[in-house]
Image (cartoon, rainbow, N blue to C red; front, side, top):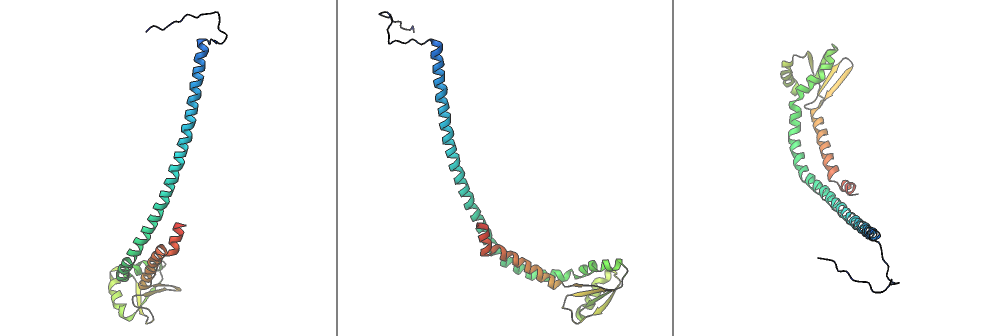
Length: 196
């Protein structure tokens, strides 16, 4: 299509301002750049507002999840604690007693390395049982009876050094530690610490 050309009537119109094409193009570019900059600034402002709102919602959601996790953990530990404690009460003392001979062997070894004669004190009822269990180890022990010892416990003596082995007390200490663990992690003060 051919552009339309109109003929100017009259000599120089005082209200008519002619702008050169290069200057007109520069004004158009400046206006476009200004509009673009304003649009980008508005988009950044809106994006910042959206980011802040999203971050606030995420923080709130994480806080709720943390409370839910700790509440669930406390509930699970509270439910499992009696079962674990009952199982340990049933198994731990017998396991400790079954390993008494091995524990004695480990406790006697340092005394024997120093060439000290070692005396093993035990209850009258368990003296023969321990002799039979310790016989394969060929440890040079002298057995003696001590009526004051609790069943399942022994006392080792070498010169001035003495050591006691009490599997029942060790089992009780382990059970107490397990009980303390569950008490700590299911108590209201622990919940307050986790939520605080």
